Image (cartoon, rainbow, N blue to C red):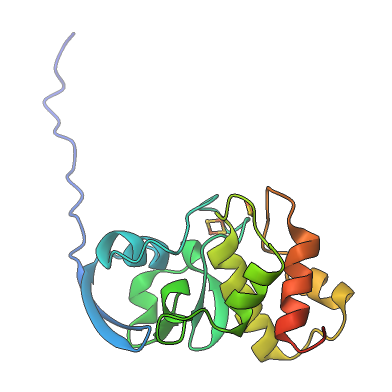
Length: 168
Ligand code: FES
Ligand code: FES
């Protein structure tokens, strides 16, 4: 085949960006690519693998963490956009190595089976309780609907959240 003599234009790779995250109360720095998600920053750069990757498309809630106290799906959040933010992951919720009240409620109510969704469920429920909007089991179900549990532990998860809210 005849050569055209044209060379393909090269697209420069954007430089990594120094990003500071306050993760579970500790200042952490990383050099993140502009496209690095908060989820990948936590898992692959900071070795905090408690936060799980499920769909990687914002549809399952497994990757839920708290950013400045608000629950977010970390797979749809770019790390560089959270420079300076306070991030709380499942590793940061226990108190001196002891499960906090919500974590203990999940244990008490056997609110998991495989456990893959559980870090996201607990971080999301932490945000839910802080929001103060859910008063009933129905409202808890509605406001936790972004967190999928393939094992179907939903009744136990709602019961655990109700216990942590002092409703049982
Ligand atoms: Fe983020 Fe599923 S991994 S929502
Ligand atoms: Fe298995 Fe929820 S406990 S997906």
